[in-house]
Amino acid sequence: MKQDFDFSSIIDDLGGGRLLAKNLSQFTNTVLNEKTVYSWKQQGIPDKWKPSIIKLLIKVGANIPNNFMPPGMNINNFQDNFSKNTELLNKYDNFDDSDVSKKQLQLFYEKMLYLRRFEERVGQLYGLGLIGGFCHLYIGQEAVSVGMEAAINKDDSVITGYRCHAHLISRGASPYKLLCELMGKGDGISKGKGGSMHMFDPKNNFWGGHGIVGAQVPIGTGIAFASKYLDKSSLSLIYFGDGAANQGQVYESYNMASLWRLPIIFCIENNQYGMGTSIKRASAGTDLSKHGESFGIPGYAVNGMNPISVYLAALKAVKWVRDGNGPIILEMKTYRYRGHSMSDPAKYRTREEVQKMREEQDPIEFIKKKLIDLEIYNEDKLKSIDDKIRSEISGLAEKATNSISTSEKYLYTDVLSENYDE
Image (cartoon, rainbow, N blue to C red; front, side, top):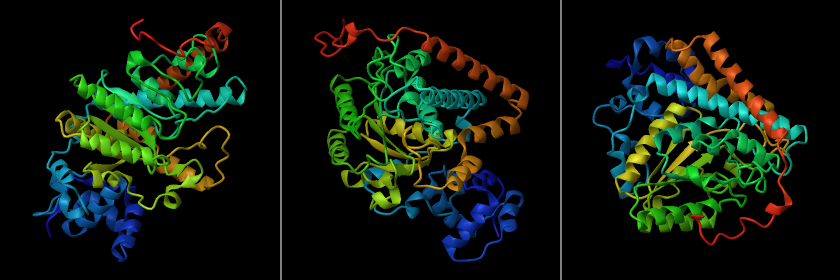
C-alpha cells in the first residue's frame, strides 16, 4: 500500500489523533482506533483514508497540499455545485507553508498577543466603569485580523462592523488613541465621540467601525467601486459576521460586486454565534463560503483559528482579486471566547465548550508551540515578549485614563465635510 510520510501536520490540523479518529469513524461509519491514527505520523497516511481526510480538511477550512490528493483526483472531486469562477479558482495554485518565513511566525505571535492583551485590558477598564456604552471584544479571533492584514497592502481599504478594535490596531492605528476613544477622551481616534463601535482612521485606509449589523458591506462595496472607477490597484477587504451573512443588503452587494467585477474580499468572521444564536439555528445554509455561488462568486472556508491558514488563504484570495477576476468570499471558521458584548453573560453555550476551544484551538498557543518546536524562541523569550506587551499597554491605558475628556465644542464638528482634503 502506497503511503506518504510528509503530511503528519495534517493530523494536527484536524485536532490530533483522538479527535481525527473520532471524526473519521463518524464520517465513514467505521471504527478507527486512536493509536492507529497516531501511527500515521511515523508510517504515513494510507491512500484509502485520504478522500475522507480531504473532506474533513475542507469542512474545517484547513489548507490541502496539492500533492496530498490521490492520483487522478483534484479539489473539484470534493466540491458540489460550483460555478465557472470556482472552477477557475480551483486551478490557482495554493500557497503553502514554504511561503511562511520564521520572521512571519514571530510577527504572527507578537501581533496576536498584542491584540489579546489590549482587549483584555479594555475588558478590565470597562469593568472599572472607565468605558461606557457598548463594547465588543475580539478575544479568540486574533488569527483572522493578523493573518489577513499580512496578505494585503496599506493602500487597500478595510471596513468592518462594531467589533473593530483589533482591525484598527492591525491596520497601524495608535493603540493610545483607541484607548482614548473608548474612554471618551479628546485624543480619541474619533475625538471621543464614536466610542467602541464607531472608530475611523482614513490615514490607514480604515473606514469603520459600523454599529448597524451588515451596514459595512454595501459601503465597502462602494469603496471597491470607487477604486475600480478611479483605476486604482487597491482592493476592498470587507469583514462581517455570520449574524450579518443572511441579510438582504449583503446579497445585493454580492450581486453588484459580481456584476461589475469589483475588487473585493468578503471576509465572513464566522464565530459560530450571531449575538446569542448558534449559526446552526439561524442559517439554512451553514456553509457561508458558498453563499455567493449563485452570483458567480467563488469562496472557501478557512481555519480562522490558525493565522498560517488565514494568511495562505488570503494570499490566494488577494491574487484572485488583483488578477481582475472580481470578488471572492473567505469564510473564517473562528470563535470568540467572551460574550457578544460586555453585557452578554453568554449563557447560550457551556463553559466546557469555550474551555475546549481554548485548550485545543487557541491561535496564540498554536503559534507559541510552533516557535518553540522550531527553536525560534524559548520560554524565557516568549515570557519577555509578553511582559513587554503588558507593560506597554498598561502605560498607554494609564496615560489615556489621565487625558482630557472631549470638549463640548467638538459636539457639532465632523458632522459635514465640504472639503475632505482640509
